[in-house]
Length: 204
Image (tube, rainbow, N blue to C red):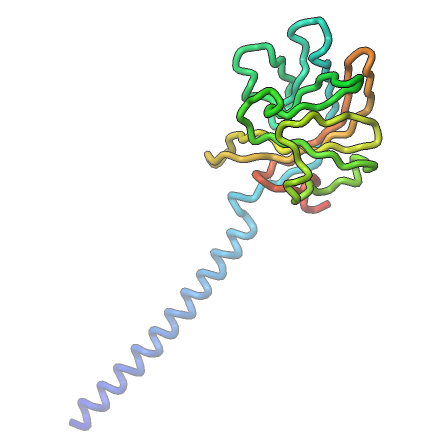
């Protein structure tokens, strides 16, 4: 009996040590895995600032099929008279009340997640993040365009590389506002991170 009890105790001690050792190895493996994931996160998007310029023409001009709208994800002008354009733009240019205005798709009765906001008396470089307050954005109202302001665009829902729908944020600063000619030139940049309000790369 003494011998059996001793062997049983020894066996339990061995199992306990083995389990402890296995636990330490599992913890070490998990730590290494997490470290590896942090270093090579497949969902982490690295990006650099890439400001660009664009030119839009007011919808009030008599010519047809001018580029009057913009897609801030694909960084391309959109001619909204063309078939299928309704879901392809995030903001359009028009003339209202003697001034140039930006119009979100909702101003045309289009069902869109695109929104516009104005940050008065700010420069392009000063704006590092889109506002969190949804009340600052408009889905349907014209947004007057003027020099010395920065405009925030929350884009319509677009596809992402992971198959999910995303809105992206962009910032825009007018460079030239020509009401008479119905032309707007501007500098802009768009964050490539899904639903992220940061407008400069994280390392900035």
